[in-house]
Structure formats: C-alpha cells, structure tokens
Amino acid sequence: MGKTYERIDGRLRAFIEAQPLFFTATAPLAGDGTVNLSPKGLTGSFAVVDERTVAYLDFAGSTSETVAHLRENGRITLMWCAFQGPPNIVRIHGRGEPVFRDDPRWAELMGHFDGIEPEPHGLRAIIVVHAELVRDSCGYAVPFMSYDEDRDLHGKRFAREDDASLSAYFAKKEHIATSIDGLPGLPLPLPPLPRPGE
Image (cartoon, rainbow, N blue to C red; front, top):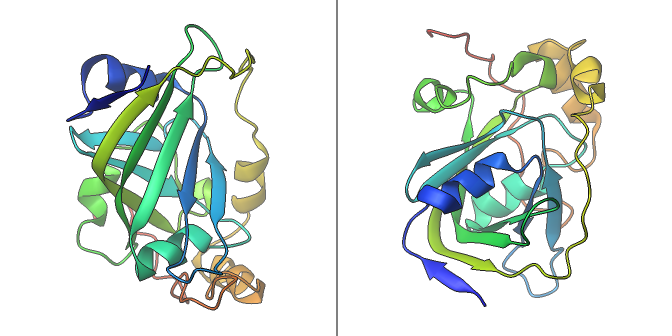
C-alpha cells in the first residue's frame, strides 16, 4: 500500500503542489510537551524548492508553536490528503527551520513564492523543510470534499498592520514569543519586512 520515495519529483511533486490544504506536525523534546498540529492553506504559500526541500510561508497567527519546536529540535512532518480524485496521502518527515526576515537567505527563498502577495498576511518567517523520509499511503478512508476557494479573512485582517503594529500585536499574544511549553518562539520585535529586490 505505502511506498517510500528518495526525492520529491514527478507525480509526487505534482500531487502535493495541487493540494489546497496541508498539515504540519511538530513537538518539543519533553515527553510531556504539547504536540502541535496545524492546517496550512492560502494558494501560492507553499513551494517545492528542490527534490529534497520544501518551504512554506509562516503568516501571522495567535501562536508560534511550529517556530518554537523547530528552533528547539527541528523535527517536523508535513501531510497532504487527496480530498478529490484518486485516494492518496503523502507525508514528508524531515528537519525544518524558520528563516526570519533578517536572514540573508530571505530574498532567494521568497523567489519561490511568486503566486502570493505576502504583505497583507503579516509574513513573519519562511519555514524550510529538508526531507529525510518521503512516503505515501492509500488514503482509502479520507472522505471526498470539494475545494471552493481560499478565505479572504486572513488577508483582510492583517493588511491593516505595518511592521510596528504587527510586532505590537504579537507582543500582546501569550504564545508568540514563547510557546505553550515555555520554549523560545518568534523573536520580537520583528525586523522590517524586506521589499522585493532588497
């Protein structure tokens, strides 16, 4: 039923790039720590960088659990499900890192995301994942569901913020600078968002 792949290419790449939704899972090293599972969407915010590397844009939210866990231990799993067409589930198990706005790699990585305007969404980091294990499985029990369109609420909400007000918003949130389990999360205040060409 399941198969292991050495790289992300061909049919596998086409499948994950076509999905409007994927999930990320991370956890702290502590055995009693909080496991985090997050849905990710917004068309254009995910990219296959190369055959063993993927990345996605980490937008404003009410916590930064993924960032905190990756800063501590780097472990992450991404999962895509086929809600339409033939059944399929693909997982990428690997090591991830948050690339922050002041990282010299920022501009090059942003070149992979020309299908989305990041500014209205309060972009705070780019999550880069290096695949260590790529597998698929049948997905026979995943239901059929239809994708209509992306919600526009996230962009409408965070388009009102500039760098300073976004940092102030994050500072008020309990689990942005520090995770639920007390790990370092998003470094604040945010560096200015680099403009294209910077």
